[in-house]
Length: 402
Image (cartoon, rainbow, N blue to C red; front, side, top):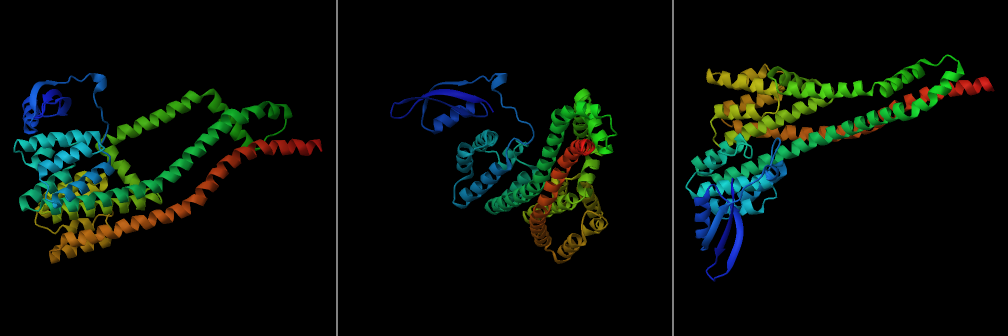
């Protein structure tokens, strides 16, 4: 949205210079006049390429969006109009992209555009779940309750995601440290003993020979190792952008030892929490399933959600295709079946989400306590093998000299 610089005078006769964002010049002029300001000049500031904001991925951090949802719900509960609430939040949010989007939404609201329609024009900022629940809240007249549910949903989603990240961070960190230690030893330490081993004219242990070969390879052909890493990263990025590749990667995430179950539980928690929030907000069930499939975070789970939607269109129960899906444990499908029979699907889904969110938290705690000693032992073992490969021939030489 363009930025306009202005020179105005207040009722008291004080001259003021400033800037504001608006959809167009007419909207900016209208906003200044509403503030009882006399406008002398109003010009759009031209933005150079170097001054442009460039965002990669999701431009708004989840924590900033959570704070926005909670503050928006609080302001609406306090009786603040949606226009004023949007203006206030646009000015005080720490997220620059969110602030710009809200300023644009505020301008649209002043022109009489519905809030759900205004935010739909900013798809990178406001996810489909948010847009559809807001639209349902407007239609039902319960926008305040919808905002409360959105705030709770995003808070729980963020909490679950952060717990899974914390479980993965430690082994990744230790793995990087192990690789760095091995490269340093093979590059800088092992070569210092090569000439001594060659002068011994003795049969070296197999482990020493292996370490010497690796050391020569890293020193003489380091560019091939670097190229291999680059190719692996490039192959991963390309695979993520293809339908079959993304599906295979998501399947691997669910099947990987130890962490596969954790990823599965986290995805189930996200699926049931999202579905429950949409259903409770009176979003049509087929539309809810389409949204959940899009933001499920896993192509494998998304495939089975799509099958459930197809089954529902044919008049069959939602739980029927999910029972045949290996990614959904019996607890999930049975609770969904009970919810369908009793007409309390959102309640059953919320209970399942609560259970799996708690299960994720407990699993993360257990993993941390179990992985810490194992990974320390792994790091010590990797370094110990290289040290042993160097020391064994030296002990043999010392024994011969004695």
